[in-house]
Image 1 (cartoon, chains in turn red, yellow):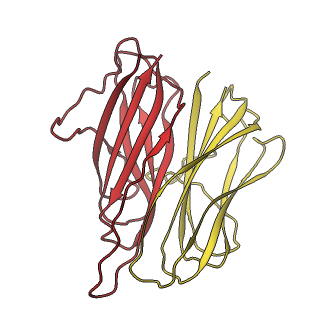
Image 2 (cartoon, one colour; image 1 turned 60 degrees about the horizontal axis):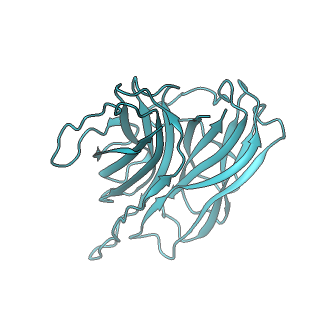
Length: 138
Length: 135
């Protein structure tokens, strides 16, 4: 059996750990690991930027909190780069691609709380939105 | 058999120049990247890059893994490549890629991660690398 949790949030400054705690119309979804679930089996994550600043970043996720048994786990999942357009031109869209880890195999403690944070590093590209799904299993 | 994920990032700004990735965003000095206790194998790498697009040129980026945590010696892997015709009005959105490996490691010893721009100088490049260990 699998259970899922999806959260999202704005990451608008580089080198800033930003908790992802929203879920659109649900402002505070539960971050408690469902009873009986002992692992994060799969991770699906994406991000997009408005590209309003000329920069280049790599984006990463920090999984922490009391539910993560072996300490904080950190992984990169994507990058964004942008350079200012010529006067009178439009910039290309930022089309966030999925990054998926199919066998993440991260140990968690059920009924305890997980912390999901997003962060970017490099040179600021503007505002970003991150969205991530964790798939729990046994 | 759980997995452990360790990450570093950094920016390289010169071609053919080995540059260590030693920071982690808000952690400017996370310290040496040590092979976790009990880890037996580097199971995969997750890598991504982004460039300033500020130079009309084309080049590739590779990483080098070195240090006493790798008993078989250094490893090199390609991260990606980038080219632009004009240095205005570009945008890139990249997904990381994960490469499955089977590299033995020595627990409690350091692995150093370096990135390098090869080919033509594509401007500044930020590179992120995650090491995925298995016990």
